Amino acid sequence: MDLDSMDCTSTIDVTDDDEEIHQDRHSYASVSKHHSNNSTNANAASGLLPTTTSVHELLECPVCTNSMYPPIHQCQNGHTLCSTCKNRVHNRCPTCRQELGDIRCLALEKVAESLELPCKYMSLGCPEIFPYYGKPKHETVCDFRPYSCPYAGSECSVMGDIPFLVAHLRDDHKVDMHSGCTFNHRYVKSNPREVENATWMLTVFYCFGEYFCLHFEAFQLGMAPVYMAFLRFMGDETEARNYNYSLEVGGYGRKLIWEGTPRSVRDSHRKVRDSHDGLIIQRNMALFFSGGDRKELKLRVTGRIWKEQQHLGFKWRMAR
Image (cartoon, rainbow, N blue to C red; front, side, top):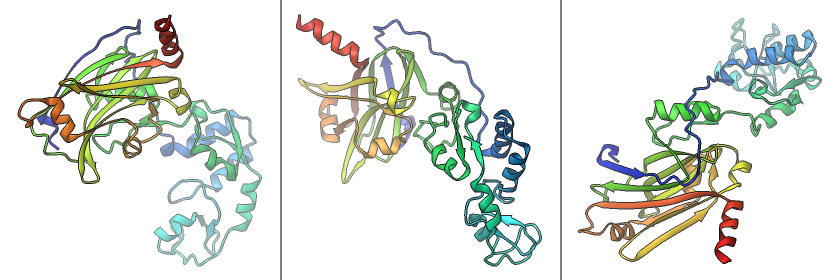
């Protein structure tokens, strides 16, 4: 889909006393690229014995530099490497070039069982310490692990904390930034028959001191082309549950309304889209809302974000 052929205009109705969008860039060093350095610093900071650091260095694969887990392989000269890299080096020791065979370093595997190490995201705030073999499981769900870039228009590999990603979206992806909890967007497409798996628009809203991503895109749902709008919360799922949002689209006396809870950006854009968790508009209905000769898409999507307690209080006042 040609993104340049689509225009989007938006007007923002601000009803909350929101703060200005924070635009301070927070530097973030990729944890995965500096795993051994972070682990060494973390060991020293946590007061672990120097021998623990030395053993941990022995457990670092010389090829991929990741920590090794059973089965740990070694050559006849005692050089070790992980099972993944054993296949990559074609059964040749990367240190001495001797044939590896199928020798396991059981002694090193046993030593690893006695180690306790801090989470690799300690530098980002995680205070937990785990047995060596239990650490990877925690790190896959650690609340302090960095977030992936929520931009869906390209395979962006940037990771970081929320302030860093907000600045990244603004400066690198040129995403529109707005302050306010209500929005009114108009999406225009000159040839709506050209529906492909591509993202049309991403807008970031600063509301209640948090950031939200509004997605609007076109894709094929089975054989039917559809348009979809949904909201993602820039934070964890537990925090996302504190908020609700509504989306509305319509025209000529008809309207579609969606209400739901924003998904966390921990869930990928594709996962949210494929679960159909948002406002879905069939192309024929979208063209009806657009009016005219049905050759141009003109959709106006309005919506708001609220906290659940605030919404309940509003409904109670209305009832009185």
